[in-house]
Length: 340
Ligand code: SER
Image (tube, rainbow, N blue to C red):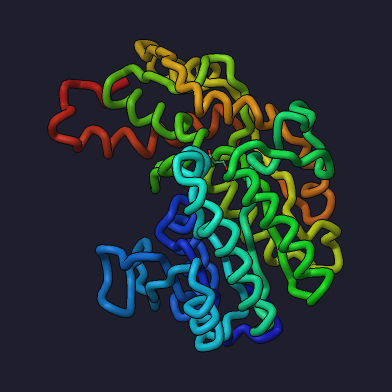
């Protein structure tokens, strides 16, 4: 990170999750493996006791449960990070099944990290989400500043995190920054328990079975972003001139919005035989219908120069190009499903 004292490391929580699996390698590429300390609630299979392998690099690794304020405080005091990327969180559908745990991990964990940042002077990145909006929010062209009354525990914890980031910035001068991510599409790590997971699953199943059974209705429109854009958004926001940032909770950022039907049509451009079937899961459908259909991210574009590179067509083409050879190597599925 381009910080006044670049000798201080970058600390990441939830390093093995959907975002961390790609942000950690990006941070290593940009700042070097010696600048990065990864943490998660459990040790990854790769690496030794105090290290872990991300991409093709080995970095220092520590087991850290963000729910425990003492552990967070101890690691931060020990490491003295320049920046904390606080990625540890439960996604929306899992959170709805375990609301008490979701509060602990998502809200208490964020509070603990902000406290550690206050004490050590670290800058903080906290991801927010389209889930920070709710049924009373305008769903089309959702503005940066608008009603935020989510009715999911995931959304409640995301609004809590945003308010805490604002508070720690104005009250204690902590350099807090955040992004309201839409559904993130990636060929690297599985999302694990979100409402937008369909937009990842659809590609693997297209290549494996030439068909996909979607848990959302075919016309459910949500914002989406391809992971390379999301990673670049994080890096660019964290390198932005603090004087230019008027929002310290989280910025709306999006790339495109689409429905399962439109995503399927795009896949059919590459695989005409692909079919989509929708078997609606009422819980996740209800969650999706409480979220924006398309956010207005003009504040991010004007305050720190956000711009996306991947639209729907580019995302679909790149996902299929990356996944096709991998699916073709899956021995039990080698009945030609990976062609097309
Ligand atoms: N992708 C997330 C989810 O579906 C939303 O931030 O839970």
